[in-house]
Length: 277
Ligand SMILES: O=c1ccn([C@@H]2O[C@H](COP(=O)(O)O)[C@@H](O)[C@H]2O)c(=O)[nH]1
Image (tube, rainbow, N blue to C red; front, side, top):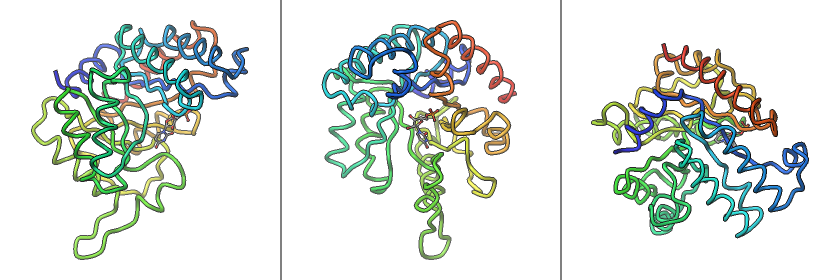
């Protein structure tokens, strides 16, 4: 079954809150662990146990595992496997993007079920040109996986690149161009396409984005970066029904108490369900 269909069903069953599993060094210490591989493992797998049975999607941020080298990546492999075993879809936040031939290797690493890092979906960066992502698109189609393409990111530096307008008649912003590509890729999908966009929960009012592209929208920046449910309503309007709001530190700061993390996930899912009407 396509990623879009699986995501649609998972959100209907569990709600639209995506929990980021980002083992920051400071959080490991707050939880009483050392900033080493043993601490990483206890933190990450403890989080999986607390949240993965209760949310539709978890989003491990690869960087926090890669900083420990191969042993950290081995922990990431377990996070992926154990989250999926608990019924959550795994969106691996890697933000990769390169020339096409290298993109193919990344796609094989993260989307081919034969790989130990295979996930349900990954984040990708289109800033080498959307066409450079074609190997990710083809590989995602082949393996029923999904992509989330950076379009309007949650950080304040993003607009310098993403609001740049292309030359010529009908010039479009870079963000708008990415959303146009996603509209094309998702055109015939029912009920939801597998090719999503990343659009921050922190955006100012004046971006003028056409968010009707029939695909999922990952909205990071919810929680710790200041994005609220009211911001989601303001930014996404009718497209809020396709939004997967994502928070990492907002949930992880409640640990290591699993009950507190679980309660936050359930509460946030209830709040976000109302937004979808
Ligand atoms: O535009 C983007 C894209 C991705 N991220 C990632 O999401 C989390 C946010 O963590 P918080 O602790 O909830 O701030 C992190 O992994 C980022 O790399 C983003 O913030 N903005």
